[in-house]
Image (cartoon, rainbow, N blue to C red; front, side, top):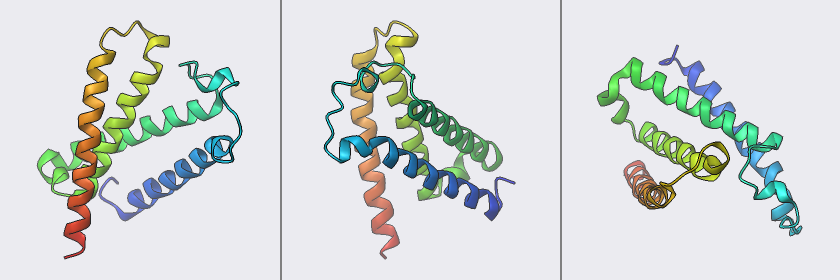
Length: 138
């Protein structure tokens, strides 16, 4: 199942749905509306349908990565630039969710460490992306 083309198509459809959800969610910001007066935008709680959907997508992507690693093993999984890119994005999404919603779940005394880690992971995403782009253009 994980190795099938159908699995990849389903994951790609989920990715497109996620992009559409983000566009709908961020439309007020992108259209110049003042969202700072809406407390739900910055309260650190998963209290809107959009935030719940983003959490669901992060869980789906995590399950996808875990299944692929279990089926293929880390060595084969990590040989694919797309898998490494997806894995990095998934880890960052999960860490950002923890960072953003952490205070409403538990007291986070490690927030400063997460900030440094997110900076390093963002750098890794940029270098992985550059590697994938340069290897695909050869």
